Image (cartoon, rainbow, N blue to C red; front, side, top):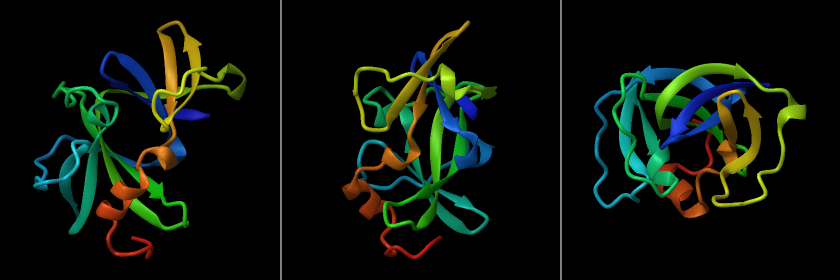
Length: 152
């Protein structure tokens, strides 16, 4: 499978390429007062408001650093009810696409966060999958997608 590889803090993670709509440079976000800490803000994507999650803060780390290759990954987020929404993910050091065979993936053995999936090892070290459908807890999902389950 093809993964878009990036960092959360010092560690490498991958998001299935099938979930990626596009990768954008950092942009100014509208701040959302009283929003949960992991919400970086809202971006305007061709006239559509798209919530942006800071992956570092979602993982309990300080906010993503602004490296030259820190990006906003626009993903196709599918709710448990099957509705599709665009979701921005602020990710540090987006490295590009990497092929990982299913046979390389193994259970990580530790479930630190629900959105962290299987791991693979390569010459650069360990790479862990981000399970997009597990990223948003129900309460946060309800806050971000208040327009019911109509597909965006």
